[in-house]
Length: 170
Image 1: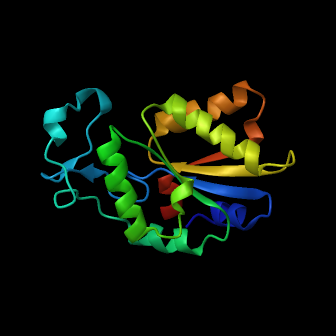
Image 2 (image 1 turned 45 degrees about the vertical axis):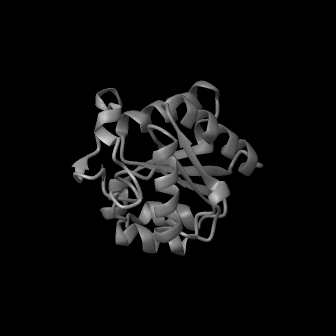
């Protein structure tokens, strides 16, 4: 793992770590046909109408499982989903593969704007001084840039550090 990231996570000013799921904690695929995750605007009910506990297939990433288990700070999941079916199935996977992330710290959203609002709430709750921050890890650069810009725009740039998941592998 990147030493800068490792050191930042050990730092007392880091108050929480928030992870996306698809492509970050798991492989970026889903569904009965083991297809690569589809863009939001291309996904229709026919693409996932047969999803259930027996066909859902997302594989956790072992190095991330070990890393998440080792974190001694509050851990969260903030993941985009299409519907309540996907919410339930992702929660089931988290219970099995990432049990150290408490259920009350798991958020499923439909838009990046919802992600931003949840991250602002976590930062407000956890960051008690100007030196405190939260860390957000995602595989989607457009989301990372949008989230960071939203914090910059309200004068809270230092309250969040955003990392692409590839930072864990360099």
